[in-house]
Image (cartoon, helix red, strand yellow):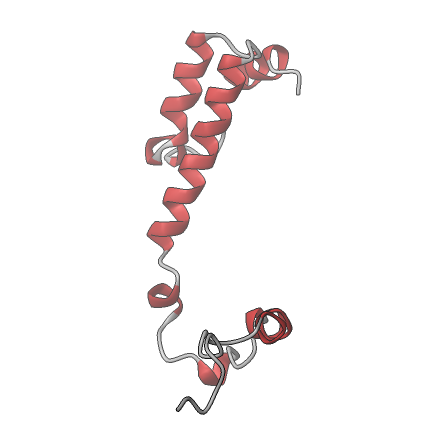
Length: 105
């Protein structure tokens, strides 16, 4: 003899899931006193660097495909996106001028 109806053991109801989910996704209990790892351990700077490089390279590819920049300027800017591009504090005026003239965003 069953004590409950068949199919009632499926788990949480749709109402519980939808009412619980928005409040659960908020960043509660994540303040400075609750953090056990260092900032580097929680979100490494390497991960941030990789994301930044991927975004910049994706933009360059998008501009090249849409003919906003030609393949020569694409290559020049692509080589500057990486760590070698940050070796110098200022961008040469000639390249910046060419980039500004060619790219009309």
